Image 1 (cartoon, helix red, strand yellow):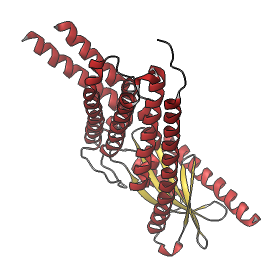
Image 2 (image 1 turned 30 degrees about the vertical axis):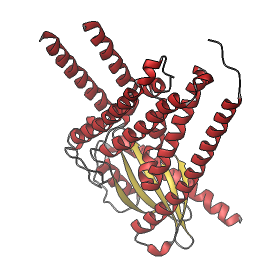
Image 3 (image 1 turned 135 degrees about the vertical axis):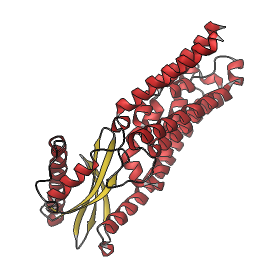
Image 4 (image 1 turned 60 degrees about the vertical axis):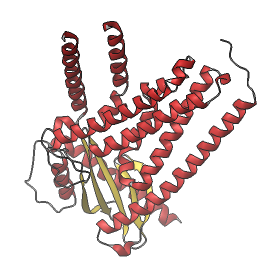
Length: 192
Length: 166
């Protein structure tokens, strides 16, 4: 079923394009962990509220309630980060609130159309986990390439290896490489 | 599909959302107080003056995150200079007129290539580093240092004036 495969691939890449702002901001392991975990909490809250609110509310109101839940979840995550590490909060708080305004969270906040979709809601949660993991991995990969190592501490003379990878262009380079790798892997599996 | 009418369940939902928002707001307020105490303590520690017992004010003006004010030893400003690819942080102590007295570097994140030059420029502004240590990158970084120092001067003068007026 090549057409179905293509649809699934297109949907996955659309979701990753929607995540691009977070992937651009995730330029280190620490910030990647913050954004990835916040995204997971926000995405799960949005999809859980969309499932739990009675269908009698109507699609629009359920979406509004889900988004309100997602924003409150983002605020709670920001509060926790501020308590744990105030310095980290000061550098990341503008990015934390961006997690609620990404395409995958908007998709998760939409009420499932049918009973079959409702029963497959756990897939939405698994998708959120995958996206969160992707944000963390991008942060890890970019820090590794930018500095030649991974550290959570700040230093007066930080190590520098490939500084462009810590810049927004680095996220685009990594996304391009991932897309190319995915395409090669897909072409090989179709040829077999 | 017609829009459902406003019923009791929706009112309960709205009340729940408002309660959650209030709880989140109170939590945020608590976190701000805790963070303020932590940042004041960190500033005192880095300035090697535990006897300062500073009080923290979050400002978020330009590149200044906030200041730790000590009744006897003046104010120290936490500066964060962000550029693509990283962030450099320093604590700058100023006199009552807003002039820079000393700078303590807190460092930058890994892979941030501008950190050593920002460190050198801040040290030079505080009169610690020797002149002649120049780099072509300084041309792009100097405006950020000047902006941070001007913000500190403006904020410190405003604080001193309001303290004198009281």
